[in-house]
Image (cartoon, rainbow, N blue to C red):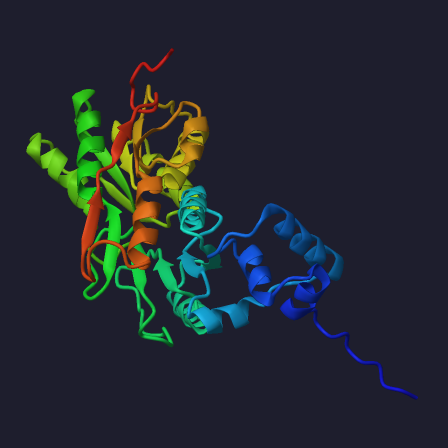
Length: 336
């Protein structure tokens, strides 16, 4: 009995013979350059590719060119709309430069984050963009120390790495001051877990103290809807909560709003809210959230440019200004 053989993969040479051209012309058509190909010839090559079922070998191409045309991106919570929107903008920015993006989710876990770094670097990507909720991410598991890396959406500087993030201190100042301008004297803070006093907390505290107000209550929770929901119950459940609250993410704020509804409290009549991030989901709450929006398109484009070697050297930190986007949750009349 004969042993069945695996069909031989179609090669570039097979396409060239079928189309009656050189292998170089096939390469020019497949890769859209670097030399132009007459329209009729290019059409003949594409027809040969279709008929024969030719699939270019990306690994072989990477070995020849020294570039995989692929970037790695690690996000901490892919089910969080903010991180999903940021990932989409990174893919758009990369595509504009001719690169694809290999996406990995760390689930906000430091061990998984290290493993995703190791895996992406082993796949010979041309660069890695890391978004992390860790105060001090461990980047030591990268198998190739020559791979460029950029830390995106970080509020702090990590020595020897490019880091790009929004000016969170300014954003929290603006958001809290906006609540103060509404006349609220007691302003609480719902804050994600952090090992040290994070910039959003510093901005909230500075705004209160600059205005001569006492520090409001603080509840710390996960950066999730569930975390915000539980924080809202804790802060307002006994009927002694503050008149307003600054919340460190939109997802937490949505959870806080759910808790307030269950407690019979109205937004903004009983409790005013300003949140941080500016994810698209914040536009569809009732009432619409007033939020400090991060310019994710600008940040994503900057990260791709930096990881591909454009701009400043390592250690450069780009602080992008945020924008206060008014909804009705703070007490503003935004009816149109």
